[in-house]
Length: 264
Ligand code: ADP
Ligand code: MG
Image (cartoon, rainbow, N blue to C red; front, side, top):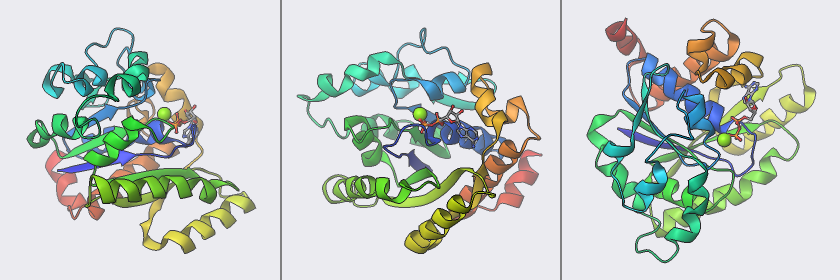
């Protein structure tokens, strides 16, 4: 079982799109997947086809130890994976948790109970390095960092890498950077190419081979409450996220072809 946090403290860089679609593509390859939404905006919840306003309990009650993951999880029917939903209520979690014991380790403890139910647990982090993100990093084996190849992209990573280091020292010695994922990529842009080269120089084979192109179908799918596979399986975005799922399995040492045969 592998636990991945999908994080970048910048907003709008493709975290949620990556979380929902990687979850659906891993499920399509026969993996048992749980997606935990840790953003009060609840975009991953909605993108998985779950109505966030009526979703209850959510990850908020899990963090407060009021319910278990088993009680809170819901099914994404179009995505074929389970979801721990989130909604605006989660915005208060930082304050509510601050005086509680083990506030950094609450999610980890809750997820441990369902470890046997899944092959992958993905966590969609909020666009801040707050207590929710720390809970995600404390639970994760590794962090997947989606990034746009823009001018300030690398600069923004400094704080994120520093936070991962702190968590490594204090809470989770095993945590690693899983990989940097180039998203919304436009191969015709000179700047994107240059920044992409810089990222590769800096992070070497931590950079995923898979590149996610800018693709309007990826942006449309969430408004229908669908992962892109269920919305338009043939589009470039769907194919790219299938490639990412296959690469994720390869990196985890799993044989993609064998899995595809089993699930065919
Ligand atoms: P974050 O979770 O980091 O805030 P999102 O995944 O919500 O970012 O993406 C921000 C916006 O960009 C959303 O409107 C989303 O639909 C769109 N988007 C994300 N990835 C792509 C892509 N590869 N091509 C086109 N639009 C994308
Ligand atoms: Mg998001």
